[in-house]
Length: 225
Image (cartoon, rainbow, N blue to C red):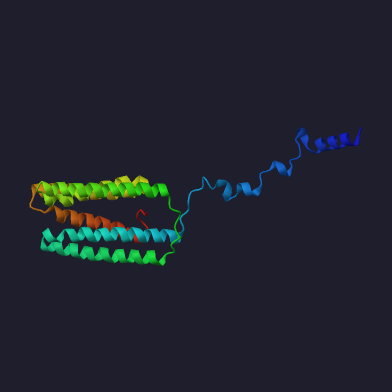
């Protein structure tokens, strides 16, 4: 028997069932198990500092708009309600400032990379919101019922949170949208059926909802952009 045949028999004797000896080339390289091979499927991970920056932005934005809603209502509200909304406006301002300070103190590159497609959809939703709010306000003023402009804008704001929820992947925004939309409906009914001014209802209700979410953002429990 030749030397080559002896080597062949020895190979099969040491590996039952004729299984060949695995060679280095038969294995995937260690690099194939690393991050590069799964970069297209691995979700983006948000760092702690990135989360802090996003929560600061959320608190700043919601606090700022809460100030606006609280400030809209006192002119037509009772003395007690007016005082409560002034206090709420001050609290919202404090929260907005705290949010701004958190943003300033967080690294600009701390958060995950922004998705241009998400930013585009976000811009479309907000653009439609502002367009509808403006057109409705002009229409209500034209037909002689400017008192219901806050109701219309409140309703548009509430609905826009439902549209933003899937865009920002923040289901909790639906709860905020439901609360703000309910405030708009309540303001409409109270304005029609009672002597309560709609702006006092929308100002206090929407301002309170936004303030609550802004505070929750600071403690890390609210949806973040």
